[in-house]
Image 1 (cartoon, rainbow, N blue to C red):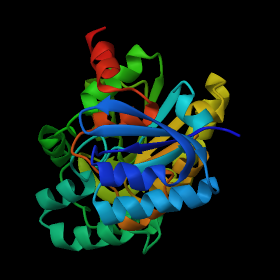
Image 2: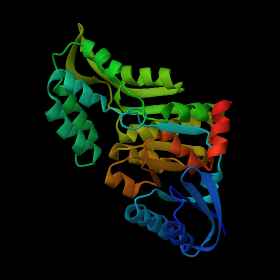
Image 3: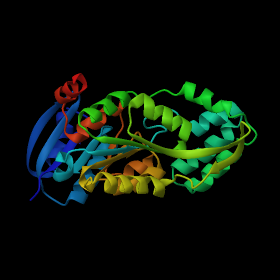
Length: 294
């Protein structure tokens, strides 16, 4: 039987005891900070343990993730990120809307799309349509407002030190994705292209929309191109349109995600810092600090 790992953002004994009850036999490792690893042979099935951990997360207000031992211990060679509300703290379409004075209309559509209530591609067309007639200068204004999620720079630095390939696959827009790529030292960036004529937004997206299916395709294409086994891949995002790529990856991580996304994802992190993802890779605080000093 394979070993399984449960990673908890807590040191409370009552939570650790609840997790230990999932195992026939278990070992405990202090990962540093507020994180604990419990590993061993499960009493029941992996799916049952994952569901139990999700319920512990909900009831105990902590992160509690059950991960297959082979996935947990696999070298992380390819990591694909969503951008908006994952690597950065903004939803770029909402920021463009604020500049255009149509914020409320667009936010309503964005919320429905991220919750999976309406098709992402159609929602993007509707939102971009509201930007018709605006100067393309607003793109630079939005880029100037971008703030990175705490821990994003450190996580990307750590992944570089590990030799992993990093990718941004965003349902947002190319200028913002290229800026994020440059600032974080990410290897590849993919996003949608706003159609611009004579310095004015036409209200259309050029080419095929980068939706959830396309994000998953990008991950699969990089797997083939880089000859990386699926077990060595990670996908991180927060929206419903990230779920398909999460399913394709060896490990899918919902980061401060919408409730429906958290319920369906392999694992979840609800913490201010994106660097906490490293605990789901088995890196304790000491190893994380060592990576960042290299």
